[in-house]
Image (cartoon, rainbow, N blue to C red; front, side, top):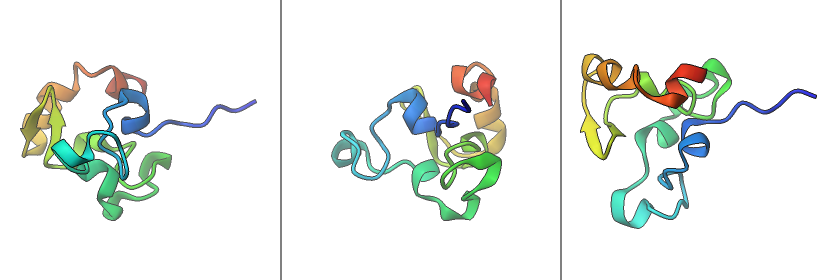
Length: 82
């Protein structure tokens, strides 16, 4: 049996995917909404390449550049399993 690869919002349970529980307060995460990355690394939108999507959150802080993101992503448990 092959297990389905999770997108970041499924793994992190952040609630910021479309219709997620925290969308009203925090908005939809760009990784969940950005169709440019759809299918990359077998994910939906940017869900499995979230480290490359500018403007996503890390510890509730918006990370704007890839360099900022990679510095925080290297400590992320989801990043480790990609």
